[in-house]
Image (spheres, rainbow, N blue to C red):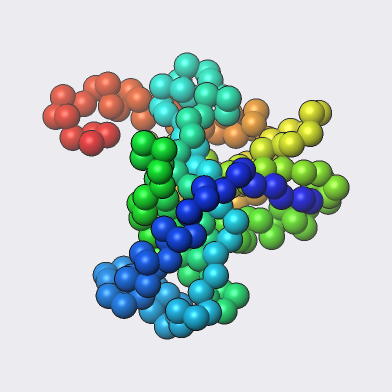
Length: 202
């Protein structure tokens, strides 16, 4: 399996470096042990890839991956070869700005999902663009392998923090994924529509 990446923002790494340095110095709440122990000189970054989002309305209206809207840039952060965080850059008026640094399970789960794909016989010899897919209302996150070649299907691999009750970490094609997500989206939308407090979905 071969991965490709979209054209990176020209100043992405330069924008991230100061934010990472500051995070290492402040040791803020919620950091993991690997990040806390990271040595700045051993920090490295993956190639950047884009986040995409599907809304409840997209799913309840029967829309698929083509309806996903493009979001932030994502970089995996490594320390001495260990995945320690997921860093995000947002595009604002044509420029990129630091958005967030996720120290949770998402970054190592991304690497695990890519290893799963790499070891899948069905994906050998195929080329995909790496993406990450979000359905925020369902707390759904997945690695999205967007097929570069006509005739190949896109592959989606749910990762943490996706609820295990919704989807497990395995390879799904678009049809199988939508078969899981659409009923959950319909149920969640009914709850939102019935809510009179205005608290759900806020």
